[in-house]
Image (tube, rainbow, N blue to C red; front, side):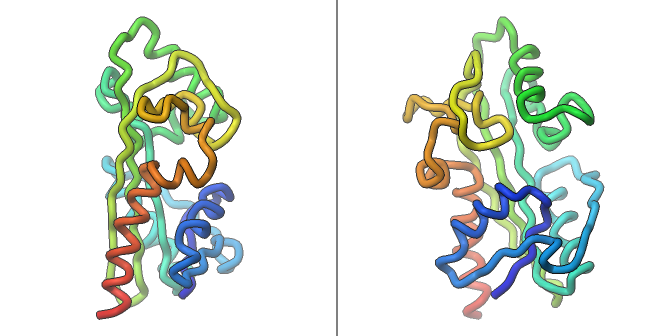
Length: 196
């Protein structure tokens, strides 16, 4: 089975293929499917944005499309950056600038609890939709640590492992991450869907 990933993020494409390939599922990019879709993320929840992206790419490509909407929710910032994680601080900021802004906005905060949230949605041309949510609790480090991952990974600290996401191997991260958990739940629903 082939799914089109409703994202231009190459690292997300690699991650999705790593996790779904053993199910015999190939995840291809929008470019490989011959489409280029810009979706305005107007939703106020991860679920809404994930559905908007998957539906738009499915309609453009005629193929089942999978989308992930994810972000970082920080307790002391009332859940921010949340659905705006990728756009935190406005246009033109790279990952490092965004997490530096986050650290600046948390200056003096002793409560560092946070969670990564991921919602994965797959839309099929026949109108069927499968959706799953995953969360990974952690804390926000006082400074970036590690070279791996992307986004807020260098400042997202996992107390049980005593490491940030950026210090974990791909396998370690996939085993505990919000996206790993969402994909795990999604796989179960997808297998049920394929065998009905």
